[in-house]
Amino acid sequence: MQINSSAMMAMSNWMNNSASNVANVNTEKYNATQTTITEQNSAIVAQSSKTTQGTDLATEFTDQISIDKSFEANATTIKTQNEMLGSLLDMKA
Image (tube, rainbow, N blue to C red):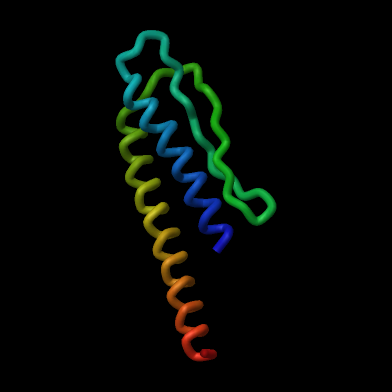
């Protein structure tokens, strides 16, 4: 369950960076933030860095769809684990 929660936090960070990039698409001299998702010590981590380019809306919007689906999948996994634990506790009680 911990890896799912760390993945959700990483996806949240990535979505925040993407939203900032989209919000600043018309800002002069704005350098977009690129987010890379990696696994470190059984945790999913988002690493951000500034690029030398502006915002590519097509990339940002497709990334946001992927982020949303990943967040949803991790939330479903946590919900299922919670339900299974609840069922196990009900059987033991």
